[in-house]
Image 1: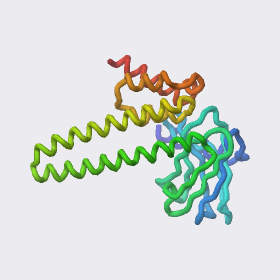
Image 2: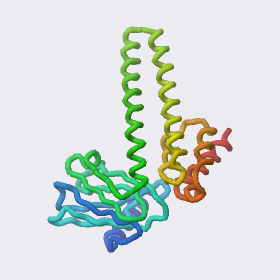
Image 3: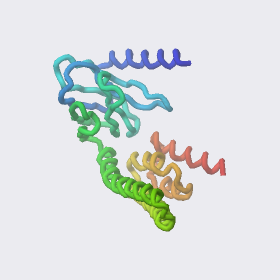
Image 4: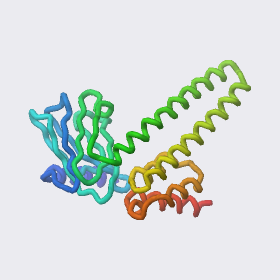
Length: 231
């Protein structure tokens, strides 16, 4: 099985290296500090991360990559010489520009040209505030446990549950506010994984007919149906 997986990856890579960097989506940009090596464009096909295009740099930091996009989905820009790090972004039809620099490849990334990515960035900005509050609550619980403060622990547990509910409601409201964006079903799948199926249904029913037929729209519908079957 491992040999077959390795062969598949190698074949995918060889095919992508021979491409002319064309498609309904073009990804252009440069990585400051990286002028020699290979940049890959990747995405998930089912559960396997595959190479869809690549470019060999030799003295130039500018790159161009391409793929045919049916509906907006998450792609990854990766560098062979920088293992275990990549730039995730919402790819969609049109021209997308990505600039970054080493060594902080992902955290230095600036992405433009993708409407879904813009919405995703807006969501992550607010979501990070919930994450900060959750981290503060975890630290407070740790201190309360050290002090054996049961009363405070109960209060902090309530606070944690309240934060989770607020985050779920914010995510659902964000998705329903953008019914014609592929980022909406994606957020439902990735951020509302443990939410009540009624909340997932509400988000799903709010999506436009077009989005329901996209990759993440179909995945959300399948996810909801699987939950209902198991209940």
